[in-house]
Amino acid sequence: MGMIIMMVVLVLVMYFTMMRPQKKQQQKRQEMLTQLKKGDKIVTIGGLHGVVDTINNADKTVVIDSDGIYLTFNLGAIRNVTPGNGAAAVENNQPAAATTDDTASDSAADTTASDDSSDKQTDDSAKNE
Image (tube, rainbow, N blue to C red; front, top):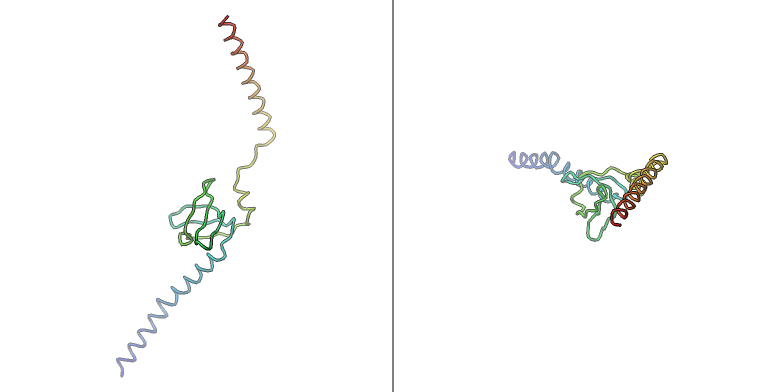
């Protein structure tokens, strides 16, 4: 009788120390994957950081944008999710447009370069004659 009680106690201890926490962790991970949406920042199990572009629940795949490179992964390959602001998070990762000062100096440099090339073409045509 004492042996049976010890076996039952051992099974209960094993359940509460090993199986139950693992089930809670699985439920937490499943909830994280179901709440995944476009614009969320993720990290894959391989350590690749990116932003969710599209999610295909039928195939259980996700397309992530990692600095302009689009990669497809299984949902199981996602290790960590940081909620983003949806589409706004994707737009914020894009490089900012050049300021007007930069644009003005670039156009001035382009004008100078084109003047130099036209002078060179004139010199070349003079040599050919």
